[in-house]
Length: 424
Ligand SMILES: *Cc1c(COP(=O)(O)O)cnc(C)c1O
Image (cartoon, rainbow, N blue to C red; front, side, top):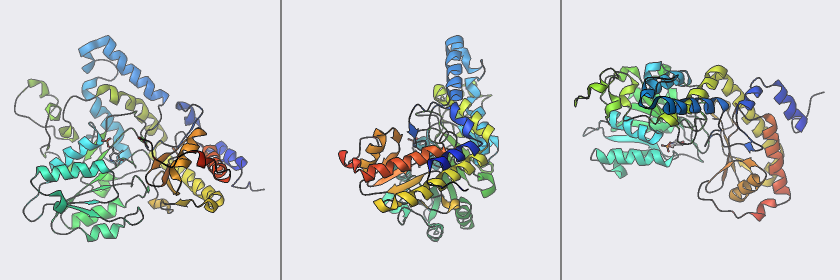
C-alpha cells in the first residue's frame, strides 16, 4: 500500500531512500531543525578540520606558513578557485576566492563598467539585495554620473522578474547589466543563458550575483558566455560567518586591468619584487586586492571537499525533492490558515528555498524558533524556509509543517509580537 504523503512514516521512508542522508552526520546540527542554510550554512567537521589545520600552521610556522604546511597561504585563493570552478561551470583559472561579495561587485564593476557619453547606464532590478544596489550606485557616482538617472531597475511583479522585461530594457545607452542568479526573497532562478544572449546581442557586458545559487544549483558560466560573476561562501557553501567570497571572470577578458588594484592583483612570481608598476596576473587572480583573510578561507578547504565528493547535480536533485515535498505539505496543511507560497512552483525557476507569505509572519517565525525550528523572516510578511540537501532530512520538512499547523491551530503565534528583531 502507498504510504500517505502527509504522514511521518512517509517522511521516514523518504529518509531511508535518500543517498545523501549519510552526510547529515558530517555537520554540527544539534537538536534544532535548521532551515536557514540560505543565510548562514552550518559548520561541517571537515571545515572545522581544515580551519584547525591552517590555524596550527600559524602556530607552527609563523611567517613561513605562506609557503609551508598542507595548505600554503600564498596559493590558497587559487587552490580554492580551482575547487569552486566545477560549481560555476568554469575553468580553474577563471575563478578566485577573494574579498566579499560587495567588495567583488565593486572590483568587477570598477573593471567592466566603462561608461561613454552615449552608453553610460547600468541595468539592474528592483528586487535584488540592497548591498548590490549600494555598490552600483557608488560606482556610477565615482564615474561622474547620477545614480538616479544612470541606474535603471527592471520592475519585479510579486517578487518575480520576467526575462522578457529585462531584455526589453536593454537599450543602446546601457553599458553594463548586473543581476542576481536567484532572487534572495522569492527564490526565483533567472534564466541566465537567455538574459546573457540578449545582452550580448546588444553589445552589453553582463555579470551575475550568485549568492543564492552557488552550492545549490549547477551553473554553466562558460557555456552561457557570462562576462563575470561574484558570490559569497557563507550561505549554501557553509564556509562560516564572513567566509571569503568568490569571483569569476570569463577568460576572454583576461588581461583587463583590475579597476581596484592591489599587490595581490600581481603575477605571483613577481609580487615580491615590490615594483611600483603592477604586472597584473593574467587570470582571475588579477582581481584580488590585498592580503587574503586566510583564517576565513580555511574552512572552505574542507567544505568544498564535500561538494566535490557529492556533486552539485546530486545536491540539486535532492534540494528539489525537499522543496517539492515542502510545497506538497504546505498545500495539504497550511492553505486553510492563509499561508501562500510566494516562490515559483516550476522546478526550473525554483532555487533552494521556499518563501511563505502570511500577515503574522514575524510572530510565526518566533513561535517556530521556540520549537527549535530555525527559519528566517523577511519584512514585511515573509518566512523563508531553506532546506539544505547536505544536512536536512524529509523528516525536518514534515516536522516543520506539522509544527506550523499546530502553531496556527492553537493560535500560539499570538504570544509573540509581530515585529522584526534587529537581525532577521
Ligand atoms: C548575501 C548577499 C550579499 C551579501 O554581501 P556581503 O558582501 O557578503 O555582505 C550580497 N548580495 C546578495 C544577493 C546576497 O544574497
